[in-house]
Length: 246
Ligand code: 13P
Image (cartoon, rainbow, N blue to C red; front, side, top):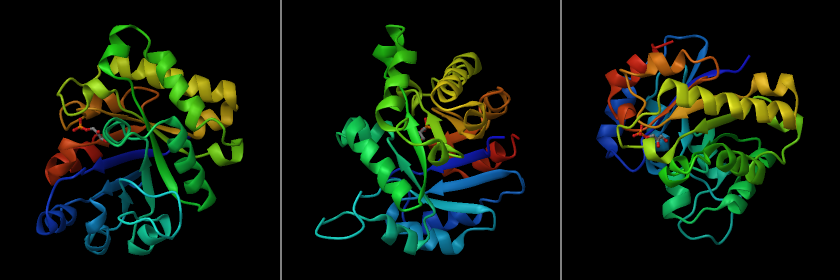
């Protein structure tokens, strides 16, 4: 069965004391739910030290090389030494604002796999693609170009987050029907490319204006294995309510 996950992407928000306060209040009382927070990299260390049990800390980004002359960048080994156990790859904000295309995202996937570093692979279509009715092809292409080159062994247990760009930070949450349709399609493609066992073992999270009011309905969809939460993860109480939606 796919692991249930609730992850909070804090993006470029919070200052040191706010990050310290927020992490103290995040508690995971669900044994079967994996909870991860993604603070700004500069705070990974203190957040990892201040977190409660059963909460993991991740990195919003990482460089593909382990060390060297890459001014301003952070490597998987550095981030791991600071307390990060997992990274985001392919977030739509990195695709849109930092020109990360499917080729670079594939290299990041390979770097993570080579260094045994967990990741959440993000995909999602912009509004124009949704309005043109081409969202299924678009997401399939993102997966084929950056993720589906992995072997079955590498793919087992991986995590994909479907985050429609039009739903991120807009309050326009995908309906549970829209989310379930895409998640079911993603699982079917994994089945076709790999097999039933792999498809059942990949977690598929929903992200995009998911909050304490709509999480329960979204998480009750058969193919939604949890959420990647932005805005609502910045409030401890709201985020804990989302964790407890299971
Ligand atoms: P919001 O929950 O603020 O829409 O952000 C979603 C997201 O981008 C998480 O990675």
